[in-house]
Length: 451
Image 1 (cartoon, rainbow, N blue to C red):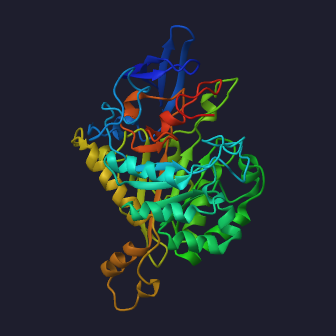
Image 2: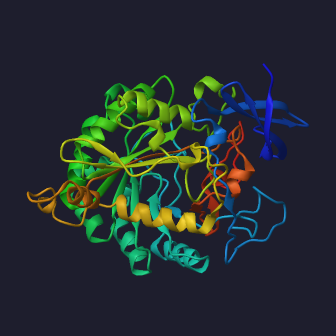
Image 3: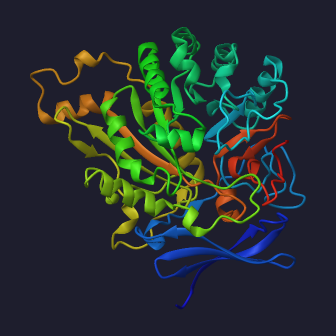
């Protein structure tokens, strides 16, 4: 089968992490990232598979560079993060890893948490991180992460500190175990200004949790959602999608989310990326790409969430994520608020200013991932026309289905990385794009994350 060159870019060698030329190549229904390291040879990895075709998905961005970069360009991307002056996007959401401790031993973990964890950063250190973000162009949306951040008894104080410094949206990334067993902790988080729990939620079957997290957890996840509802916290379900484990559970996850609205605000799918030590490189059969996730959503919801209602991101590279936004009506119908505008016959869309895309994403997440702020008894009352009901439901029953394809050493595309707006603060206060911070070579060596 003939290959078609789509674009020239750059990547890294999975063995030595040296920057090397790369090509995006179409081969039938697949798009591959192809690259050759002078020392370690040729590598190709699937990065896009199926419909929507990549050509109908790509949306150009006009770069917007950091106003106050914290590092200089010395070696070039991806080695000068901080952010450097050549990064092409502002921070939308920033993760603060407030602990490396964890109360699970997951088979899948970005942070490789819980293994000989270092001492937690103190409040004074975390305050310096907040000030670094403000000096770099903040405030932005904050995710308190780890490890498992809820193992810290003072997590509410950390959230309150961020809110006092002007960070208006704070969410907690959590496995939900403490929330499930400690209702008072959920109440403390909400009183401190936390808006949302980004809840690890891999499926509706305990066999899935046993495979990915080491033990059955479905009951604890349900209890965590109940406690979040009682506390007034929004919840976004976050499944890590692993072929052969839970891809066929996508429709059931969405049905579960809809049944638990409006406390559950949506589902954010994360196709598995391969970080850490891999003696054998992951095969293409071990990956699921954005169009495959979109098609699985459409198929497994019996067309209730059509593929045409999912769109590329406005702020980051189009190959990084997707989103579809809907309103759940009283009769159970889902009315779409989004559509892929690139897939028509009107030519190439006008470039989006990257900074404006990041601003819109920050505002959307802060509004629609938080719990509703008006009494639900006021929604859908008698006397409303259809349009009035829709407008009222849009305030309380928006349902967001999204996904993000994080890059690993095999799939890393530096064109994508330069437009990243999901960032992490390193222990020394540097601001690093998520996929650079978590990047590891095949033997587990890291560019930025300290062991």
